[in-house]
Length: 315
Image 1 (tube, rainbow, N blue to C red):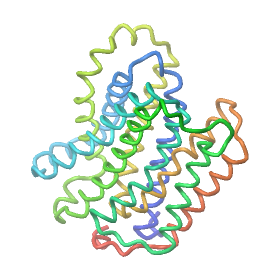
Image 2: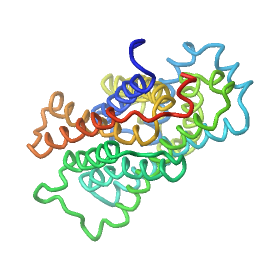
Image 3: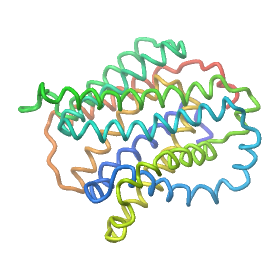
């Protein structure tokens, strides 16, 4: 790892973050329909904190003492958009549309992130990066089977599809907000808020936001009926999908522009595709494998174009 430049290390962290996030499709399969969405989120965040708090130790208190009002505002926005609102919009959207249409629309996340990073962060994108992002978006659409027979948008699903697009926008806002917090931080602030502490605080804020709506999902009764497989899924969701994925994310986004993260987000549906085939025994069409190749190609193109980050020397 030491032999790699900060930008290359950042891309490795982003790859790990989105690959772990892609495993959520498998872990959620064992608890979906048995627990409410906010209950799943709150319990998984609890397991994440159970792991991270002892590891972070006294650095949490030090970071809290040194955090400014602006730091707390950024942390709150990341928890609000990246976890709470994202899952809320996605949950409500799936009640009014199909999972196939929702999967296709989430492919808008890389494109929205790239646009926001250009508007808010003034990130410059060369030809390789633009083609890489377009390749990622196309790859995600292919993985979700946009052009497969029977995959079309139904007029009665418009409301649900709008909600899913809102979820994609929330994920993009989270991506850009994470980068803004790094770019606009003072040098002293960067040292005071390490990735692990950021993960702890964002998880704690998100869990607090989820507790009230989770109470309306009758969590105690349903959790009492949950078997070993369900609990293991929640632990995986908390430790790997949340704790480690967010830790990798914050380690990556401080070294890479948000537009780079946009392209690497294609690893999430690609990982979900691989695991669905390997673990769940599902069949993947040629078109979906072609989509995976496009995603990897987009990441390779992004890797060729190393942006000169204004704060790179700090890392």
